[in-house]
Amino acid sequence: MTDGHPVVAKLYDTVMAVPERTMLPEHREALAGGLSGRVLEIGAGTGAMFSYYNEGVELHAVEPDPHMRSQASERATELGVPVEFSDASAESLPYDDDSFDAVVASLVFCTIPDHKAALSEVARVLKPGGEFRFLEHVRADGALGHAHDLLAPAWHTVAGGCHLNRETGVLFREDDRFELLSYEHRDGVTPMVRGRMRRRGNGGLRSVLGLD
Image 1 (cartoon, rainbow, N blue to C red):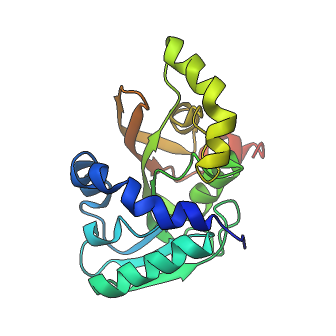
Image 2 (image 1 turned 180 degrees about the vertical axis):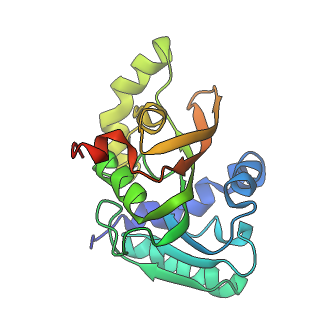
């Protein structure tokens, strides 16, 4: 459990208000569209995804920041969306192996201290054939990428632990525990990647060899 970032939590919805009205709805619809069964959202934040899930989904949400989690709980109540919350970290999910039909991550892997361990946990709790769906901002290429590198330490401090220059898309695409179903990269000042991956039934070559 963490003390969290109360200032970031308080300002988050205000800062994100314009993107949530303009840019993000299409991404959130793609992340939640067609999901059913037992779904886990990692790093639910203030609950911006909740209104996009289909009725009848058994939704579980992990959010270690108590201030974010409180706001997410209030939003779930306002929307009438049943959500089972956990304060666990993404690196140590309190769920059984093969227990979810889908896992969703939206703008969260940038803030997870050990993002590789978190991806291993996603692979562990997903059922074989289950989907991992993600939307993340990533390090830019070229001169802008070098600017991200320079800004990253200060950004991490003021943005609630966010790593501005993580190459999360590479991490996802190269993990052989998953089959990449779709992947989209959008350039910008902070490039975004969105995709879907299916959990392989055999756990991937690295897991079979005991390398994870």
